[in-house]
Length: 131
Picture 1 (cartoon, rainbow, N blue to C red):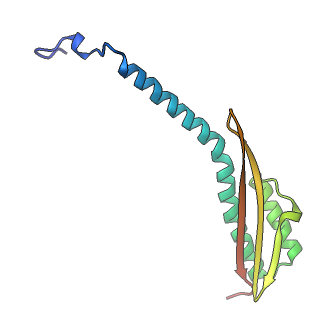
Picture 2 (picture 1 turned 90 degrees about the horizontal axis):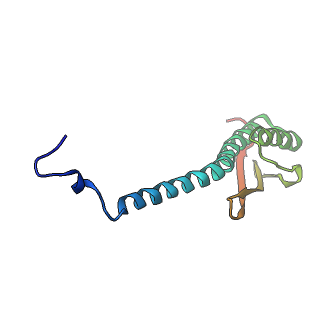
Picture 3 (picture 1 turned 90 degrees about the vertical axis):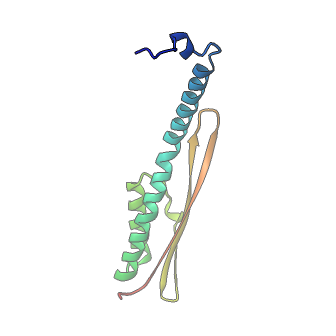
């Protein structure tokens, strides 16, 4: 549709700035998607594991689980969330009517030009006994 007083040549950008800006925007969007694809799964696993460990520690406090049972449950939850965790890394402490669990693990992430290792630390605690 033509408007009065406008030609097709008026709509063109003779210098190509619009095309260059579009290509740069697409490249930045692609790079952000690639980084998100690489960083998303480890972060999602961390958040999911953090919630599951909170649930397990609550169950351990209310059902009087032994330390070995609690560690085995956390190992099972870590395996479900595809987190490599060693039994020796899990610290269970019982202090003043509370059970506390803490551990940390690292995940190497390859970001094409370099590799970065992310360190994740999880701490959870619960009171012992039923309310």
